[in-house]
Image 1 (cartoon, rainbow, N blue to C red):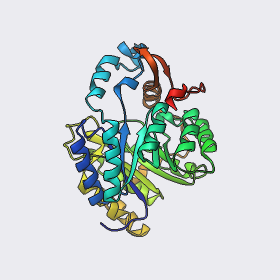
Image 2: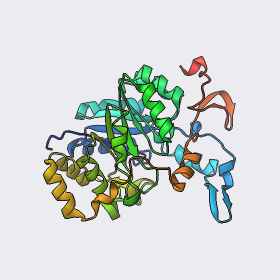
Image 3: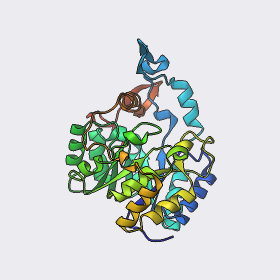
Image 4: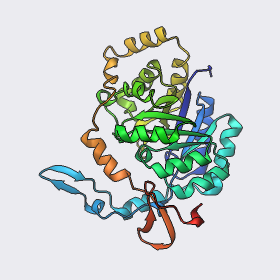
Amino acid sequence: MPEHRLSLVAEFCQNHNGDFDLLCRMVDAAAEHGATHGKMQTIYADDLAFRPQFEEGLTVDGVVKAVKRPYQAEYDRLRKLEISMCDIERFVERCKRVGLVPMTTCFTRAHLQPLAEIGFDTVKVASYDCASFPMLRELKARFDEIIVSTGATFDGEIEYAAEILGGTNFAMLHCVTIYPTPLDQTHLARMEWLGGLAPRVGFSDHSLVARDGLLASKAAIFLGAEIIERHFTLLGPEESRDGPVSIRPEHLAQLAVFATLSRSDQEAALDAERWDWRRVIGERRRPLSDAELLNRDYYRGRFASRCPGSVGGSPMVFNWEETPLPRWLD
């Protein structure tokens, strides 16, 4: 593959469907088609927090106030998708063997130290933990590189997160937590604002591949993104939960090639692909939409560190709580 100037993160998420052999094939395909980083998600069903307000959801006068995501159904789904810590260690080795930087998103503070010991030097912070300030401090002490998504996070929270991470090797990714993200709600101009806070900026793209192709990611590259993160799959779009917003190897290769073009050639390619592509630029500063606020309400606190001997959803330590974790979790 051609060399390119940006970090291109293949986000495997749970598109492996709990099959470690499939995850390995994804690693190999990502490396072959131009990725620089291979990222998985460290998720365990036992870390899922029971929150009664989401058992039935809440709708008032036809307006959704809380989404319906019953605990047991979500627990059962996640249980089938788990990758063991032993296999996560093998994932790190596999990535390094094929020339990818191994990454993971860590969803609980309890897993930070085990993941550092396994061999991850680079870690991802999900949008819903951008404002989990105790977690950011603990990450700063354990990892060489921290990449933070900023979706569904208020501007003041993002600014304080950048202050906490100052002096370290960190990056911030613009992200819109609508799945899939419509092009006119992409707001890539946010990267310029993030550039005043972080040493490096980029874009985590959740646009619908069948409808919008690679337009948002290409536009972000043209506008100066140093990191592009895209969900990546070897399956069909309906064979995994994140399939519709996931690119395939040929798409990854197209992004890698696009990144090698001159800026004038990139702009010409975007103009040829869609005359109104600049609609993705949007606003540097803007309020969170109702859809983003609903997702923030559910996903922030979805996972927590479970204390020994707990039953059901308690006691658990959430990522934003200032209370130190029990020593056994360090």
